[in-house]
Length: 345
Image (cartoon, rainbow, N blue to C red):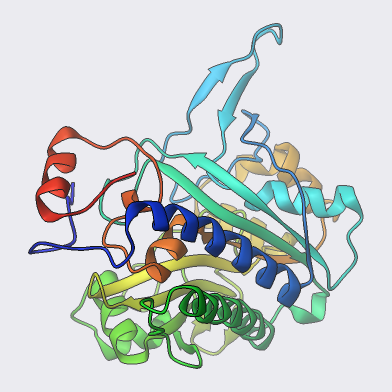
């Protein structure tokens, strides 16, 4: 467990009451910007889904979902969502949302297997969004165009907070850069994926790493991805695969790379079968979600999650995620935070 991110006494630029106000302002303003730039409508979303339907997300494949039996529903169990990547695609179809439009929602999850750190908690909150796309938009240029719009929303929120709280000086570059995970490996072959992210974030200030989930030429993926939401196997040009990635910012408070979003163009029928086979779980094709996708009953889409606490933490210049959300922390961590000047909510 990583405890605090500061080596000496730390003082937040906003006091705790002002922080609470700024958190809500950040969330409200950014959500409006995101909806406008990506043409999204807000919808309500579940916190629990039925186990065994294939709707819940497996993330990296080892995280346990919080599960419990449901009274008066025989043997059925519910699971607290990990994220809503697959649920959102179903909802696009159920609501009949046309190409070029989409939806977003507030997603709240519990991840008991999360390694606690200054940027990780067992409680996860994010804006989950999904957009219906044309088949022709399954491309890197469209992926990059969408990332740029999200980054514009982040920049606009940074500017708004500076207007409200002048002490929150803007630090983000005007534009976000793009790099393939494969090229990042070529540049830093002796570094770990997280170390490579640090170098890229430090160099660019804001970067989108393309192609996460599939094995790189070194034999290992840059990071894990479940096989049934992002497309990480489609070849985009010789030597490069993947229509997904992560938005990474350089965090000057933590002095490290800081992921705020994981997103991508979603699997089509071909990519789903290919990725299920790679992951050794072809049996999933019989599940509710997967069978509907294979029958062509679910729209082609792009989507992702943008961390609410992560974005607030970055824009409000906080050293610990516990400064912008309420969670459960070990006593030793709470004591160290007190000693360093970090006020946990």
